[in-house]
Length: 279
Figure 1 (cartoon, rainbow, N blue to C red):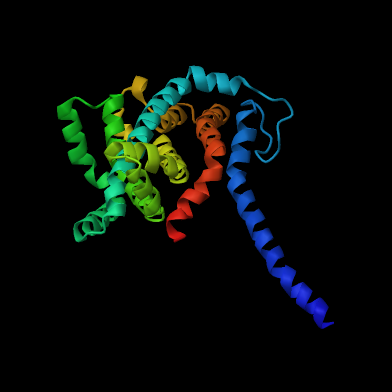
Figure 2: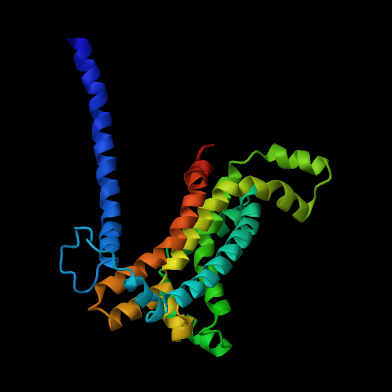
């Protein structure tokens, strides 16, 4: 009897954890399911959003593309996201290397300042930032938005790269130095190839944040031709709020690029997040 009781007490926590994970997954997938069912229903279809459509209505996607300019907005978002992500990865890794390898008081203070910048709300600097961008002629430009987004995302990237590099063995770099590697050659040929897990994490976090960013983009990209995906969907929904199917189709189209990138890089994501704390 005691053996059966012990076995039961052993699997009960596992069942509880599994049920909790399943409930969390279903809760996360629920908005996506409702968006999917709504996007393929005609406006005349008054059935519940919980029910799948009897006839799949693909015209909603055509309306979102033609009237909402969603493909143009996706293109603008892709330019801003790719440009920002590249800058954040390169600058973040370069800035993190001395912070991780030189344990000085100055570097400790710099890293503390970087962590402090993560906590600064971006909207708190909107007014002076917009004024400066307007004077420089960078409003309604891709490069202006890329520079702003890079500045906003760089502190977190530096923090993640620093934590990861501290867990890397110094002996590898010392051996490369003995073989003649110096300066940037040491960084690009020895250190950077070891940063794949954390780089994947930075790409996902930066890409998703920039892709979904609304508050800054709505002011920096005011022209309809330059709007990124979040302001474009907001504007389209405001003008066609009665057509929920087209609005849902626009939202669904905006999710697909980020979802594909995450599926490709997901195996590196968790490893990069926790690697800096394994030591």
